Length: 266
Image: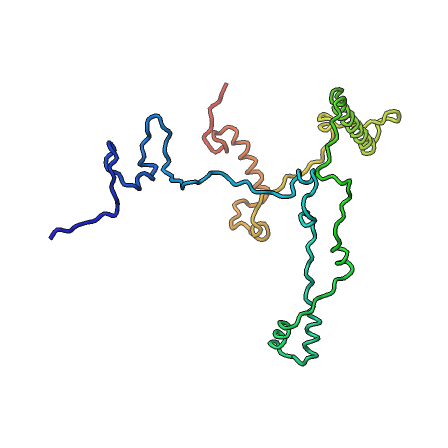
């Protein structure tokens, strides 16, 4: 028994290109460029579709302000809308208690059927006043003052900056000289200059001898550690042995003087 397959696609004959499905016309990778025509992207647009953004009507523009506000007072941008007063819950609770209601559901029912509003205070009344605009008021940004062109041509800004820099440098020099005169004693009575030390004068000065810092050792070896063997009979014999070793190492080879004796050199 032969099986029959049905395809959900519809085939259309397109001349030399062969059979193509309608969905192939929307695939940009399958479309071929036509000679002398722009490349197709495969996007379908609805009939009567216009590209771009619509022009929205904007009220209360700068032109309207220059020509004068048209219409009634409600078209003004600063028109005050009356604000509804807030509910006075303290008065509602007091009235509910006086009526003998004590539970929460009873209070909710009482608030749903009764309404008490707060009275506007003095400050809120002042805020609700309509704003009065003087007839000579002009909307917009104030004009920037003109640039002094003569100052630019005469380089006044540059001269002013240079003069400020000179004053700052002079003030800094005076402060440095004042600090040096206070820190260093004068060399002579007639001269109030500070004495500067050079490298030669520093080398001529006597430097107190300082013992070099000992090599680092573990604390347990510096306190109570002692050698296990004493190969020298006394400290004097030990010193003489090391002195002899230093003199004898001169004629031996090696960095430490442990090698063989070198031959005499003329």
